[in-house]
Image (cartoon, rainbow, N blue to C red):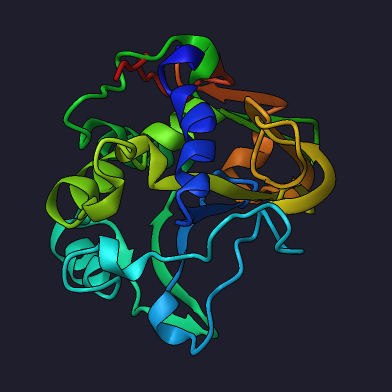
Length: 283
């Protein structure tokens, strides 16, 4: 399954060399001890029309590698702000599409959804994956599906959440596919750019109780590029993400000594049925 979206990593470098820069997507998730919480998607795109001077290529901050400035706006029909209209028209009903914001040369497109339990999180996660015209939740195996485990006695619990990078990427394919098909204009990049080149998973933040996981984009001056030159922006590289923390579960759930909820199994602890979910995807 991991090889299905691996091309995103290898082809993004081609997109960067064209003097364009991919949309950087951040995913931020907050879990309470009872499995409720919020997931937020933020799409960060540099807009050259917002700058009076060329935007320096982030992979070439010293401008000594002959990489052209960032030119993105002309590749979206009607301009980058049209992405906001597309998201508002196509996002699922449970998703909130927030107003577009601008900071300097960056346009930010934000979407979010709340969930009342881990089961609700899985149900909405599954819907997002299945919105893709080429990917299905059933395409994933159990090792790639999210897990949420709560362990310990008393009201304070040890909580662990794990999910795979490939599934996070799959949950965004509906938007990538739609924007590429409906709005993208290759122009001088015709033949060089496919849908996997127009975006990259740049940041992942997960808050679980009092613990967190973060993997953030950063510039590595010693990072080696495909052409052997050093210095490049590093995006999310981990194949899976795990956040651990402590949180308080009150009332009904406090009677559970150990609770484990996974997308691929059913656990019954203290007479409580946790949940059952599904499988894997292909491009």
